[in-house]
Structures are given as structure tokens and as C-alpha cells.
Length: 134
Length: 107
Image (tube, rainbow over the protein chains, first blue to last red):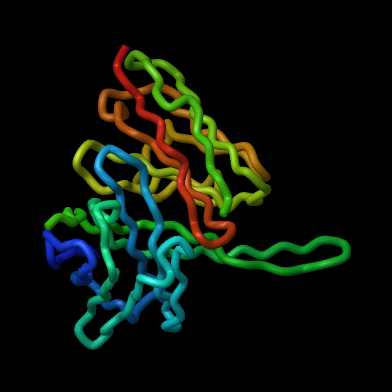
């Protein structure tokens, strides 16, 4: 059974860089064509999507964080990482890594045909708390 | 960004009740809508994806419906383990966004 485990700095000083790693066990990052994601949840608040790294290696980030965030993958070590620079107290949160699964769909109509993918987060890490404080 | 609004923010129910949670998108998202539940102190778990497809292993008392801008999650008969927080998520466009959550509480 696939499992994800976040690790990294739990306390980061303001203006410094938050670095987290998500170790994938029980399966390979390279199988199944999956993508991988980071999300976070500030204390007592809802979920915020940070970004994806696709199976192809392409990355997509939340524009509100884009200039500060980098998601990368080390498939040889079966892990992927998050770096967030210039952190402030607003970055204090529980950070989750998750696997992105996709389901293809197809449609046909009288005048057109096409398809795409539905994406959802089906395996999550337990989460790691990061506090930004001096 | 697409805004997702859930209602209500909290809901009181008794075991065995039928409950419905609504999620509204600020623009059409077709059926690119997922539902998650989150137990206190735990990571979210997917219940439904593509608006109405039940994730493997999720009890059949959960159903999802809707398309475009309006979606619902229905629990046909609430069980004790369902008194948690539920979130909707749109995956129609980046950034993927979540509703603010609906907390289901015991009446």
C-alpha cells in the first residue's frame, strides 16, 4: 500500500526558506503515471493548494506563491520536495504531500469529440507542522 | 481564481439523518469537483471525484451530484464516524481551490 511521509524543518525563521521532503514508500513514483502535490492548512483554517509536479516533470504552482515556491522530484530516491522562500508568519501551517490520480474521460457528440482527465488526491501524507517564528 | 463556497459552514444532525452539503463555484467547472472528509488532526480523504464517482472503499451512503456551478454531497444515513469536516475542491483550472469546509456536528 502506497504511503507518503513528510519530513523537514518544523521551525523556520522569518525570511528564511522552508524545505520539506515527501518520501514515497510501498510503490514507485514512476508507476501509474501519477502526479504529486503539496498542500497546506493554516491552523484552524481550510486547505490551500500549493502546486503539482506532473509525471512529465512539468510543474504548476499557486500564483499567490509562485515566485517563492519550487516543487521538484528525485525519482531515483522515490521522493519529491517543496521549497518556499522568504517565509512569514502567514506560512505557518500543516503541510501535506499527496498523490494525484487521474481518470480519463471521453465524449462524443454530433459535432465534436474529445476528452480529458479528472484529477483527485487519493493518497495523503499525515502532514507536518511548520511554524514560522523567530 | 475560481471561488468555491460551501453551505452551510456547520450543520447539526443526529445519527441516521439524511444530510446535504452544497458547494457552489464562482464559474462553471463542468464536473471537475471532488469531495473530501477530514477527521480532526488527520489528513483529508477523498470521498467522491468527478462530482459523482464514489472512491473505492467509500461507503455507499455518500453520493455526489451536480455540474456547472452547483454541487451537493449527500449522506443518506449519517453514522457516528461522519461527524467530521467536509471540503469540496475544483480541479477545472489552476490554482485548484477548496471550499471553506462544512463541519458536521452531533445534535
